[in-house]
Length: 571
Figure 1 (tube, one colour):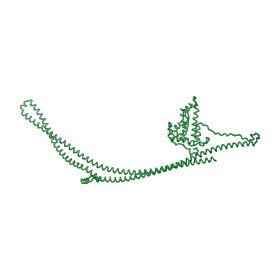
Figure 2: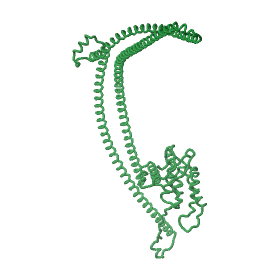
Figure 3: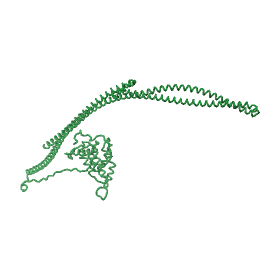
Figure 4: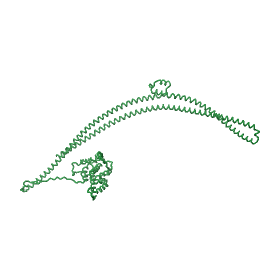
């Protein structure tokens, strides 16, 4: 984490994110738990701890890399300092919280995104609105006009966001602490000076004042002074060595504790691994036994279903073959009827029931056919009689029309005769003759009326008989239609039985195919289960092996580092 390796000069984040404007999510005490369990909290604390680890054992005067983003960040902070100079304090009674801060903050709120744009590259410009919010929150509150630890945390979040989007890199860690934080806090460098008082060394002769100053005395004084400086420098180095010893001994103890903790964790992990392997083996063994039992049950069930299927197919074939000829003779029916029902086979039972249902219908159909033929003969005779009656009726109607014409003509002659009688004495002279003719005509008229009434009565009787015959013919036709329908119904029932038998055969075939599909699916599921179990077991073992290897490498690195540090210290 010291930024010395060029291979570590990579972004701390993924290149693509969905950016949103930050908003406050911690409103009550219970929200702190959600914050501490979030991924953002882990990233934030990891960023701070990484910076903390990177500066351990480093001095402010140590060499570090200052990249272009660091220079841009420092320029951003210098811009904020410049705005402070351009916004002088206002005169107010209160000593604290000068209102000129609000003017300065308003300017920052307007230019925050532009300032962040100078640091964030063009490819990450979508992150500017989100990152700018943390910059505005990092300088203080414009309402209360104060500055506290929350604003310092916001500035750290601002830098963490820049690391997440790849603006700041791992090699910039020292510069972030030594340069960016220093510029943000406007702190002065602190120098530690060690002053050691120098006492004047003098011999007993000098204190007495009776020794003569010679060149040898001056050289002796210089040598004593140099010796005293060497003693002071040696004591300082001894003190530094003692401090380094204490520090390295403390580090050794800490590393030993970490090593013991790592060994303890390794033992715990190995025990946990053994327990998990045992549990997994037991579980897999139980699962295999359960799967084996299920497979045995499935195989048993499959065999049963295959036997049942074979029996059903055989029975279906027998039924299908037996149902092809269901007609029985009367002697066969009498023989089968004497046998009890429980001793009959299905075809024989169906044949008996079919005979019992069909035979009365056949008898009735034959009777209806005979009746229909007799009624057809009667109908033909009735039609002949009706034809003869209609012919006689037509003749009589024609004769009646002729008689009506004759009667009309006689009536006209009678009227003419009456008129002639009125004209002269014709009435007197021809009275007897006319009376006889009138009487004859009246008698003839009465005969004609009687004949007409008889013909009308005969016509009504013939019409009534004709209607009765037509009704009887329609009844017979309906009976014939019903018999035809009964015959069609029986044929349909027979066809339905055949179709049902065929459907049952198809259903048996489908069940057989479904059974084959179920067998194939079961085999595929079992193969997938075995493959996934081996895959996850191998993946878990590899992962555990990698973790143990990482722990071992880390422990070896710390031990080697401790050994080299101890060796350097003692050298």
